[in-house]
Image (cartoon, rainbow, N blue to C red; front, side, top):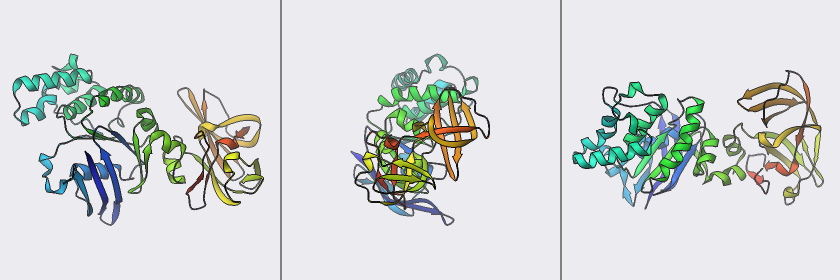
Length: 356
């Protein structure tokens, strides 16, 4: 049983929100839609939920056309970026609200609310009002109200984006356990952060400018991005991309950097390419390429080192805290075995055998 979206296209005031998006979502699977702001992630969720009808295209669920099903009677739940809770109702009553709308028996409501509350760690707070909870707890209330319905399709639109870093990390781990219990539903989760998709280990849909660029497991998309655009989207920080050329013995980056031809580039013909490398695969090395520091960002226990060599600019993702001064001279090592090659028009030509 599956949901099938075919050639979904939607334009608003001449702006493309969805551009011929097609996908198949299977029951019991977890999908993460990854893309930058305005990539079409929310537009896709709204189309699947029936909130915005596409100009072109169809959506079927288990073979039935969803366009023929009124929005209010579809088996769909949605969790938004903002904490949408009823401030005058207790946590218990917030979670029970959709079940009471269905006029379910009191005993069933009691059983389902308490089961979901236990799943999302809200049992001690059932008699409190949402305003007395932390941001993470309020988001759990909104999630619980959606989960308790037992919908066939659960849509989560960047549900952690408005939480602070520590809460996001905590809830990401909890979501893995919560979602694993939803074996009947199709779960679709949107994010601008590829690391979330890698953490969840879900099936990934990469979107950009309203188009669906690649579908696959998180690891396979990371290891073999179909295009240079996917490579930059599905890497945090974005993959470094440098134009260059390849001959029978070596590759050139920019005007003066020459590296031995990597073994995995064996089948490639000589010519111009765009070479890519993940920031985590670049490291300072005394025998590396001379470069100048533009910026050193320290985030927790990590350092993002921005450097340039002539016109070539690179970002290195270093584990640990390092102090670099603006304009400081450093040497950066590029491992040819970790390089990707893309054609001039952005198509993947070769990838490291280990994925970089």
